[in-house]
Structure formats: structure tokens, C-alpha cells
Amino acid sequence: MLDRSERTVVLAGVGGDSHSVGIITLRNALQRAGYHVRFLSIQNTAAELHAAAAGADAVLVSNMDGHAAYYLRDLPSLRAEEPDGAVWYIGGNPSLAGDEPAAAELAGLGFDRVFLGYVEPAEVISVLDRDLTVRECGFARPAAPAGRALPEVRPMPRRRSPAEQRDDVLAQWPTGHPAGRLEENAEVCAARGNLAAVQEAADRDGRTLIHPRTGVAGVREQIELFRTLEEAGADVLSFQIDSLTRNNAHEQVEMLLKESVADPGAFAGLNGFPLVNHGVEAGRSITAYFPHVPFQVRHSTRDPRLLAEITFASGITSFEGGALTYNLPYYRDYSPRQSVRRWQYVDRLSGIYHERFGITVDREFFGVLTATMVPPCLAVAVDVLETLLAAEEGVKSVSLGYAEQGNRAQDIGAIRALRRVARGYLDARGHQDVAVHTVFHQYMAAFPADPEKSRALLHGSAVSARLSGATRLMLKTVAESSHIPSGVQNAAGVALVRAAWAAEADTAAPGLADFEEELTVTEASAILDAVLGLDASDLGERIALAVERGLLDVPFSPNRWNAGKAMCARDSAGAVRFAVVGDIPLPEQVRRLHRDAVRSRLRRTGGDLDAMVESDVLRTARGDFAVWPLTS
Ligand code: 5AD
Image 1 (cartoon, helix red, strand yellow):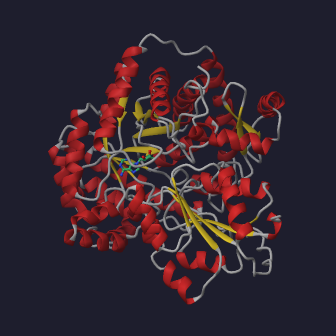
Image 2: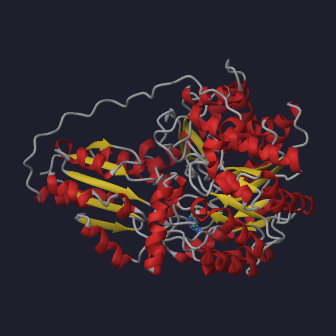
Image 3: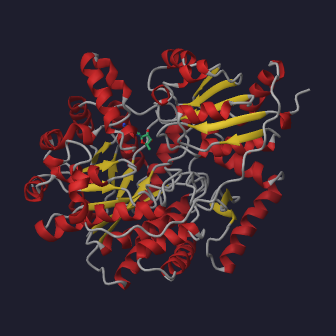
């Protein structure tokens, strides 16, 4: 009989991949099953995996960005030099290739088992049980790893103006220098579509814009994609930046681009468009094909400064990301203090384009966060804090993101609350001239594999988006559970949304949306007032302090500065509530509401809270819903 507590399982994400929900959920499930888990969180190197494998029984590697073979290219030689004797597994979406070549490639790296696509935690545990039962165990039980080291809190880095840093930023990669001439860049921007203006018109006319994502490695392929989507009726187009660029790994991108010249098939090695490597001339040439289309750059880049420079120089006047929303969901070892300072550069640069040349750059914030079981008040609070940071630097248009959670009243209330709270806090600080827009993300966590279920989800989601009055809808497709969508699949997604709106034009917003809106406004305002009241020298430092003290605490965040105490579950109607509030400063009557909602669901379903949270996290991916939204 296998004694799980005697077996050590290493669990880790690799390379630049940021996905944290899956491995945190799997860690909890393995621990509840009794396994001893050495949890390495995300963003490990092959050498770190290899070191952790010493004395372990199994190594479970998770990768969702398709670059596993690249991140782990040194693994076979490390293991050959110093064998570890563990059973190695890899799962997620570890390859951009099809199933068969992917399995062969990963087996070639030394993985004993390859899991492609969604796998139940229970199945992982049962395969582990079987493998470890038959496996000879010649290792002594390793010492328990040291407890979670608290990150060091350093003083806030000194604030530096763009003028002080610009030469260094532009020197980060050879394509930076040609982005330096602001007057020339502004002329290009003035001759291209502008998202801020298009969103103003959409809000005035009560329209919701449809926005698919697109990113491929090559310039010609990117133009073809944009053409397909423009013809399909997409209102906004964006460059989805590849994950190597997001990690500022321009040299590695260059290597892959060079290989692709020799072998055009190698383009498949990047999961998005590497704008920094292609540079300003390429960027301008693409946007010139579509002079009226509002373009955007979407990314999650660790140091976004050079990418922002090249974006604006390319005539693209909308840039996603912010100090919290592009850090807490994405990076393990990146302090909010540092990200605040880097994003202030981007905001100030955006402000300069407006002050000097009258170009309005729209700044979008990724209130989606980790996408999974994120209560609306947290999305609103972080969106509004990034808005205030941006407004201080002279930004005049913001787009605030929120990811659908699946309860229609709550999702509609969230979008309405976003608009109201942002407007209120901006006006109170003298920023009446900053325009506020909202972005409804179709469900952003793991999708069901069943295309019919996905279609039903996308249909219901489109209707919720429209009813919320969001300025823009970020599109998903039926491909979501398995791969990055093609242009044709995105075009089908656009058609699906339009069909849903035509079919359900008369649907009314549920009355409960008013309650959810008020609740979210109350909660977000309480958080914001607490953060803004912290004793620090500037807003950026207040925000960093708020994370360090757990006032802002994002469920499933891999970031070491994030408290990680807050935990959410669905109530009986499918709305997301706090099961554990942690140190988030919510008023007492609101805490009670959350507690009662979770308790009453628990009484109905039975079982324990951890099991309920796990099933809530996995529910959509399992296709465990009869209709979408869960409650309308
Ligand atoms: N092209 C299109 N969509 C992309 N996504 C990620 N990279 C790309 C790309 N290069 C989509 C994923 C996911 C969302 C966050 O972005 O499918 O739905």
C-alpha cells in the first residue's frame, strides 16, 4: 500500500509561462490527498527543476504557453550528467505543435508521461499512485523544504523621469533607437486609427465594440490575419505579443526568427508577434495597411518601457498593462515597487504624446487578474488605482478590464461599478478630463473541451457583455481549451457574438444587477479609501504597500509579495464571494454577507470548503454547467 506522505512530488511551472491557477489547484489537491509536495511555483529554469528533483519521487511540470521544449532544452543533458531517478510528467498546453509531434518532442526531453489538454486532479493523483506503487523507492525521504521565505521589502526605487531613462530604454535593443523621434512618431499616430476616439463614439452611441486577439511571428502573416479579421467585422485589432518578448528575451526571439528564415516552418516557435524585434518600420508598415483601424498592443511584458516606445512609434495608440495587473497575475519574483516605477514611465510617455502633440493614447488595465474566481471589487480597485497612477502622469483615456465570472447580475454590476467608481475617484482628484471606458472579457479561465459547451458559453457571455453596457468585448473562441485561435476561428467568434446580440436583442438586465453594482461600489470604495489613506510618499508607494500588507490580495497570484490569504467560492447562484477575506479591508456587514453566502452554499452541497473551492475552479473546464451564464 502506497504511503503518500512518504512520497515527494515536485510541482513547477517553467520558463516565462505565467499560468498559476492550474498548479496552485493541483498543489492543493495533491496535499489534500496526502502527498508531500515540493512546490516551486511558476517560472523555474531547467536547472532549478533538476536540482529540486534530487531525492524526489516524481516531478510534475506544467506549461501553458507552448514553449516547454524551448525552456527545457538543457534538461536532458543536466539529467544525463546527474540522474535523479524521479518519474517525470508534463501537462497543460506545452507545445504549439499538434498532439502527436508534441508528445514525441516532450518524450524526447525525457518525460515519462505527457498530458495534453485538461486533466482532472483526481486522474493525476491516480496515475501518480499507480506509477509510484510500481516504482522502486530507493530514496530516503528528503528534508522538508524551508518555509516560504518572505520577500524582502526594499525602499521604493527613486522616481526617474522618462528624459532621465530614455536613452537606456531605447538602447535595450537595436530597434529602440529608430523609435526615438517623438515628432515623427506623432505624425504617424495622427494618420492612423485611434482607439480612444473610437471608444468615445461607441459609448456615445451605446455600441459595444468587438475585439479579437491576434499575434503570429511574421509580418506578412500578421497582415493577413488582420485582413481576415477586418473583413469579419472586428472593430478593434491588436497585436498579441509573444511570451519571449514579454520576458524581454529579445536575443532568443532573434535566434528563432533567424532559424525561421532558413526554415519557414520554424515560425510556429513563437506564440505571438515580436514587435520589439521586428521594430518600428515593420510596425508602421503593418498599421499603414489599415489606416482607419484602431490598433492596440496586448502583452504582459515584465519591463514594458521599450515595447511602449516602439508601439507608439509604430502608430499604435493603445497599450495594455499596469503596475499591478501586469505583475501580480504574471510574475513570481517581481516586486510591485519596481513595476510601479516602470509603468510610470509608460504612463508619462503617453502623457507626453498628448501634451506635446495632441495624440490621445488609451491605456488599458487588465482587471482580469488571474481570471479565476476573482471578485469584482478587486478588479475595480486595481483598475482604479492604475487609472489614478496614469492620470497623474497625464493620460487622458483609460479602458478598464473585467473578466466575466459567470453570474450575469454580478458581471453586469461589475462593469457598471467600474465606470462609476473610476469616474468618482478621478473627478474627486481633478481629473474630469480623463475618459473612462470599460472592457468585458468573455470568460478568461479554463474553457470546456466540448465545442458545444464552449459555444453556449460564448453566446451567453456575449449577451451579458451587451447588457452590461461595456464599451468593448474581448473575444474568445471555441478553440480556447486547446490552442491559440486562428484568424478563421476568431472570425467565427465575431460572427457568434453578433448572432447572439441579434437573437437576444430584447433581453433585459436582471434586477439583481442593481444590488451587485451597489455591493461592488461599496467594497471597491472601502478598499480604495484604505489604500489611498496609507502613509507613504506617493501613490505608487501606497499601492506597493497595499500589496505588501494584503489590502490588495489576488487569489491564485504567483507573486511573492501577494499575501495569498484571500480565497473565493461561488454562492448558490454562481456569484463569486469571499470564502476567506484575509486582510482586504471590507466593511463588517459586507464580510458577513460573503461569509453567509459561502456557508449557505456549503450547507446545501455538503463536504468541506477546500473541495468546494476546487470544484468551483474546475467547473467550467469540466463543462459542468447546464446553461451559461450560471444564473441570469
Ligand atoms: N493570437 C490570438 N490569440 C492569442 N491568445 C494568446 N496568444 C494569442 C495569439 N498569438 C489568446 C488565448 C487566450 C487569451 C488570453 O489570449 O487564446 O484566450
